[in-house]
Amino acid sequence: MGRLADTVAVITALGDGGQPLGMTVSSLTSVSLEPPLVLFCPAVTSRTWPLLQAAGSLCINVLSEHQQDLSVQFAKAAKRFEDVAWMPSPGGVPMLRGSLAWLECSVINRYRAGDHEIVIARLHHIASAGYGGPLLRHQGRYARLAIPGAEVPGA
Image 1 (cartoon, rainbow, N blue to C red):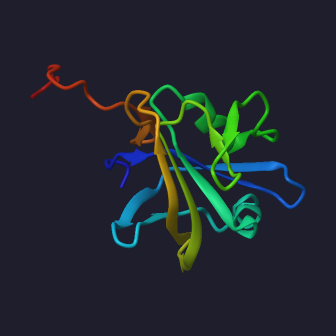
Image 2 (image 1 turned 120 degrees about the horizontal axis):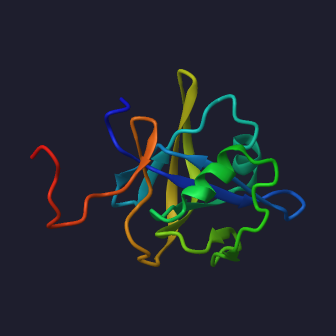
């Protein structure tokens, strides 16, 4: 499965005390246009996912190719929002500045699937900034889309 490219995103929400929460996922895909649904798959061992889920409203921040540092910070750092610029979404959920797109949503279904959960969320607000291409993961490394018209080695 490492041969498939995955879109990298940070799921954010506000915790009980109003503190921002977030975690990196690299399993994001569209499910339906009507109604607008997406899915992502957090690990069942995640300590952050239960806190995000309890918040109700979430924001899926689709990271741009220039936000690799945020992907790493939200995957491992103890203080994930330290020195991170964000603004509230229409529903008040943290939207990370510089992201390619923001998908404000709420969870409608969850399914256990091995060591992960499949989470289906309904979109309520969508915004796009258009800061370059998406941040991708491919074969365990960060990757970028090829520039249109550029030569592809070995083609």
